[in-house]
Length: 298
Image (cartoon, rainbow, N blue to C red; front, side, top):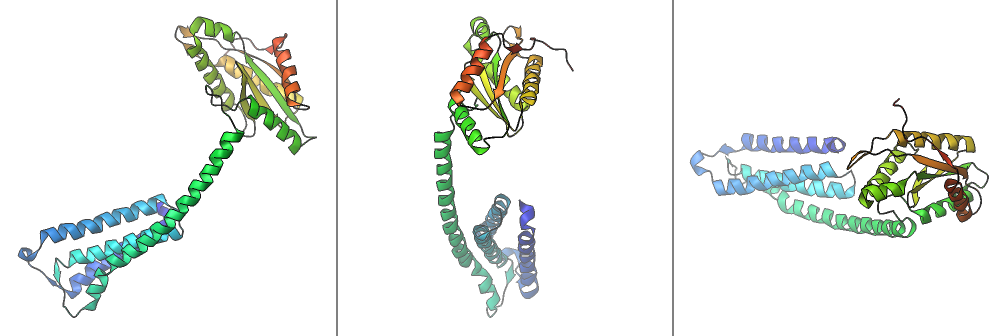
């Protein structure tokens, strides 16, 4: 982010150096015994802290009015405090007005910083309002399964309808995937291990899908996959590939490796969503299509 503000950083660094050269060339160096250490620490510390805040602001924000006001105010406070600090090392002629003008940068910078905070406050209100709307939309229109963190069956039905409305004559496939013998896993290893299997299968499926594909946990040990722009033959290839990847997955249970395999059914995503899902569920419960539990490593 600092690369975006390199001109501001360069200008601030040059101003600090120029201020030092100005005092060194125009003033008389004070003897060591005349240095007031409390003033040096206080004014130098304020300059250092303001400079640090200046860097932190530029490193965390893009350009814009709020950034310019915040950074400009902090830079002015830094330079004014730096001038105050240099006063402890150099004796400046009382008739020199520039010394007072430089020191006046501190209250001026505080005014600019206050304006920046005011606009930053409005910016935060707008962001909070935007996030609240997004959160409300998210909560109302997309529910997640607690175990797998995938969208649930209600969201799947909604997306099937939306996809049909978006492109009534386009290709779109729906695949239902079922974990073989999942009840046995729950019975022999416990529900917690069953949840771990569901999570592992969900992660493996997601790794092998396109960004535009939608994976949901339909029910129990079943996952549903909506494939926009995908025909029947391609959907079968995708399903077989997913089953093969899960079969090669090395899932380690509490008692050693636990083989996991899937069976699937696929149809074009046409017609009413509930009827479509019912047909796929019936196909899964029948002979279905499955891959063996283990496949040779590639």
